[in-house]
Length: 444
Image (cartoon, rainbow, N blue to C red):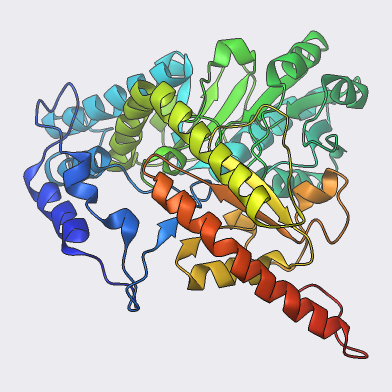
C-alpha cells in the first residue's frame, strides 16, 4: 500500500481550505508549489523505496494553484453560469476569465473557444461536426494519419461504418508524416484533414502548418489534435493555419474532465452535443465552472513557464536517453533526430517485452508506460510504431518515458541505474524460454 507523506496530502488539504481563486476576480494569495507538493513526487512504498513518475504524457499532477482555484470556485462560485442573477453572473465571469487565459496560451480569440469534457469529446466534435456539416455537399471523404490517438482513429472508423471514405496516411520511419503524402491522399470530395500536432507515443512534432497550407489550398478544413503539445511547446493557432484545434487540461497540470476545441470563426461545423444554448449554442450542457477555472489557471501557468519548463525537460530527456543507451545494450530511440516535444522519449529494448519491463520497473518504484494510457490493457502492438514500419518485435519492446515539471535529475539517475539489472534478468528469462522445446517464443 502506498502511504502519502504528511508534507504531501495534508498540506494540499490545508491549502484547499485556506486559499482562494487565483485570478483577476479572486485577489487572493497564490500557494507555494513547494509547500503543497512536499514529497508527493517522492511517495514512499512499504519497503521504503522512493517512487518516481515518468508518465506525464498519460496525465500530469494538478498544480497547487489549480487545486486552490478549483476548490475555492466549488465553494464560493456555485451559481449556474447561464443564470442572469448575481450568483450566475459571478460564475459566468469566472468562466470568461478562464476562456481569456486559455486563448492567450494558443494565440486565439476567446470567442472561438468551446469548452468540452476533454480531448476525446473535442476530437469527436471536430471530426463529426465537420463531416456532418459538409455531408449535404457530397463531401464524404476524410483524411487522417495512422499514428493518431484512438480518439481520432476510432471516430474515423465509426464514420467509415456509416459510409464515409477514410484515408489513413503512414509516417516515415522516424514518425513524421510528410505534406506530400497527405497531399496525395486528398480528393475532390475531401471534407477534413485531421493531423495531430505531437505524437503521444514517440513525441514527434508533425509539420502541421505545411500540411494545412496544402489542404486549405484545396478547400479542405484542417483539424489538429494538440493535446500533447499545448503547454509543452509554443502553439499559435494562426501560425499553424488550422481551422480546429483540440486540447485537454490534464496534460498540462490542470484537472481531468475539462478541455476545449478552438474553432476558427466561420468554420462550418454542426454541434454534436445538443440541448441548451451554452457555449453560444455550440456545446450544450451546464458548464463545469470549477474545472474550467482550473483549466484557465493551468493555461496561465503554462504560458508563463513554457520556456523554463521546456529547457529543463529537454535536458532531463536527453540525459535519460543518453544514459539508457549507454547503460543497456541493444537499445534504440524511436523518433530520434526529429523535432519532438521536450519531455518525451520512446526507447526500444531488444529481447524484452515492454509490458514485462513496465511491471518490473513499477516494482522498483518507477512509473513508465508502453504507449497511450487510453490503449492500455490491450495486447496489440503499438499502432504508432507499426505505422512507422518497425518489426513486430520492435513494436512490442518499447517504453515511453515522459518527464515533467517536477522530475528531478536524481530520479533520472536512479532510473538509469536500475535498468541494467532489470533488463539483464528479463533477457535471461527470454533465453531460458527459448531453450525449452515448444515454449512460447515471445520475448519476456
